[in-house]
Image 1 (cartoon, rainbow, N blue to C red):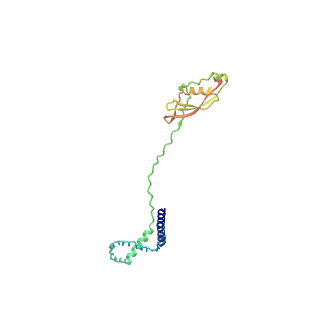
Image 2 (image 1 turned 45 degrees about the horizontal axis):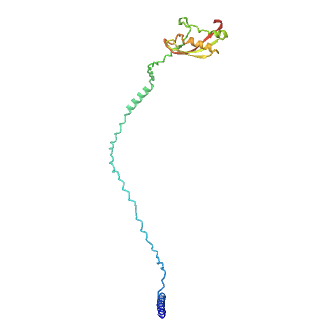
Image 3 (image 1 turned 120 degrees about the vertical axis):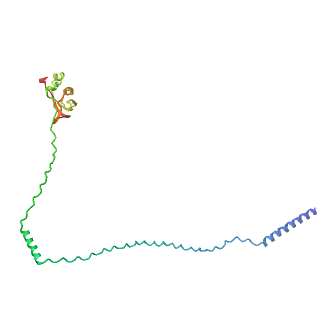
Length: 220
């Protein structure tokens, strides 16, 4: 019992010694100071001077070589004309007086040759075509029987393009009679007619003209 107690006492003493040693070492250690920032110093870097760039001097202009001037020789002065003698002056004056007293003769103007002007001959008048003439043999248009019964009558104006050969090239209504049956009868008859063509001098030409086809009940 005593031996175990003494053993605990020894361990407690050793432990207390170690604790005391650690405490003494912790108090003896120097305190740790936090790091301090290093002082900064502003340094000014000098700017190098700009390079001196100067424009190159202009090239000297080439001077044109002066051309030698041509020296024109001055002709020697002409000798002064000899003065006429008083006798010669008198003779010349009389000659001028006689010439001035002579009657002036006017020259007749040269006759200008007659210039012939070729005037264009006026164009020959145009004789229009015609459908009238027994030698043409054009039959009268057929009067529609129904138009006779209904008493339809009137004049149909036709526009006919007559060729140089005297045939109707185109036939159309220029003015209606007011009755379609009469208009159709006139168109059908005139399309087969023969015409005397239009004439310009001795030449037959195509021509378009207008004429009337009459439908009269008294002649039906």
